[in-house]
Length: 346
Image 1 (cartoon, helix red, strand yellow):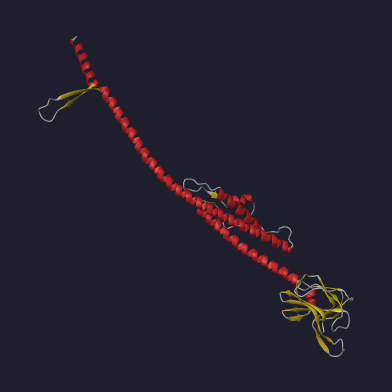
Image 2 (image 1 turned 120 degrees about the horizontal axis):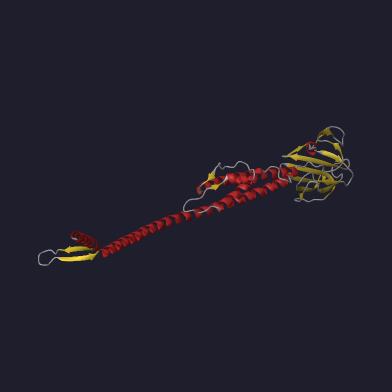
């Protein structure tokens, strides 16, 4: 019995130790008594849980504050980067627009040149097609450039262009254009190529126009249908039949009043009467060419009038020093009379 009672007392003592906590408050000095404070264990546990929760909550809010502050600073930097990228993209779009305008001008010049030389269908201006495709693709790529937290997404260049069709080699390396700076560099190279091609096309257009003007101005059309009675060079004097004279043109005999036509495009510099030449017309064709039409019965153009090849400018006659109805046709090149036959036969 005694053993059982002792064990029960021990268990009670253990329960008392775990259910309460005693705190002794010893004052400084001997005047005041020692205080004994007994706190229940559940209150201590509750206080510990509350304290830990407070620490965790405060820690969470502190870490959240610093994290939000870091994100705000980062967003400011990204906003600056995005604004810079927007400005660069706007600049690149403007450059692409300039390239498109240059390309349109090139294509217009190409069409004009082809029309002038009589080419109805394009026969190999692959460069213009290539430039057109590249400009289109470059503009499309610029419009699709995304702003992604300060870093540009990869943008394919020549690989995507090849999907449109076969083009000439352009100054764009194989691979990808990963940044705005690289794309900008490629667009500037393309702009240089367009400028060079525009200069080439302008020169080509000028050369073609000059050749066409020269072709129109060259007095190589027969002025009248008839028979050559006297050629260029030294001949026997037709009036005295003795001695010789330098005949600086062609004599072409035809019926009286036959139409005399301009041998090439030009401007009438003289239309009137000259002693031995009778009624005469002189036309300046440019490029050093001048043509003369003498012994006419009547004149149909005036000084300063522009004429075209084949236009009727006079009527055949025998005015001036002439033995019969004929046209004296002369051609001067750079101030010197030359034989018209080599030019007329071209």
